[in-house]
Image (cartoon, rainbow, N blue to C red; front, side, top):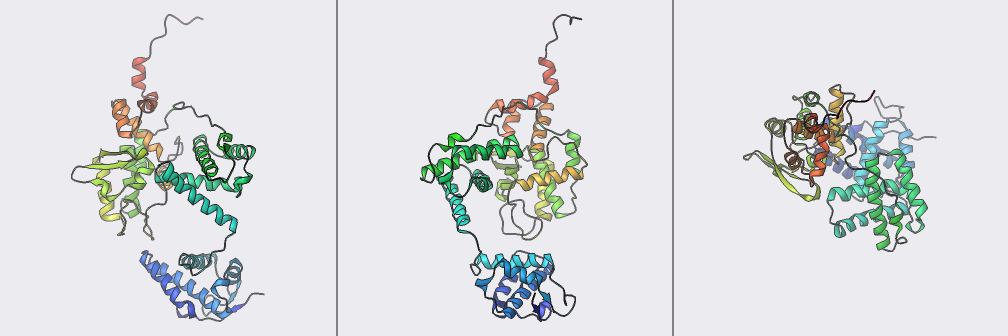
Length: 413
């Protein structure tokens, strides 16, 4: 049987001894630039939960999922619309946000299994090992950590139990539901993780040799690209009167005009833009820096976003979330998501791919067809080898017609 709550209305509730924590929660939300309506809603939910805890004499160290379920199901006797109603799912999400606030300040212990805690700590140590022993970029460290975290439920929490059969089975299962490039990157991360475990004495040695090799023939496929008209439709789909439309238009123009990678846009900082020179600094793979000329339309869109659309926030990253909290994007997948939404708005349903690389490939193809040399395209795309740029020659029909030879003689009947 659920209990009853006799507290007053949300804004008049007394959170009891938790009132200072509720006040701190509200202050944090305001600091993150949430709207007054959002702050009030979250504050009311936290205050209601605190009042209920006080009424039920439940201490902070006793809060767990069962307590949350009891609160979600209690029959509220608050005056107004909540009388005799159970709280909504949205209300409970706000309460969980309050709990995360308490956990971040170590006021509330977040229950977790000892095995999970050990695994999380091991991933952190593995990422530190990559930084110190491999010298790879932070983006690669983060990607490898995420990939291993994804594999851990199948691998198990105890590395001493790993064997060759398990390793192969996990990779094969992953290959059945993922793309070939993803699986190839995943096997690279897994080999590194197994070497780390062996180096630290946590698993038997040479298990990295059990990871199957994923064949991927370089340059075997045609580049995936959009026509010039389709690219312009994608860019024009952004609403230039709204902050998120200004941001997305600037992002799409940088991808389409300069052939930037999603990670390049994600990590772009205000200090990378040299307005007087009309250039932008890009730090790509291998931490190689290059300055690229900023096209007029991309520069105008960037300036428009920075002056009228970008939230006022103490952040050096150029592109931020358009709603509070105003922070940089969590990962490059957000950039690809912006491209996907733009394709949908533009009504392009037959795009050969739907990520940020689609515009990069389109930029390279457009440059070649406009007469640029492979060397020039490779410089803009920051390819280490001309062989990589030569991949785009497959779609340069004019150049292929020049080198194509006529068939000798007549074809037999």
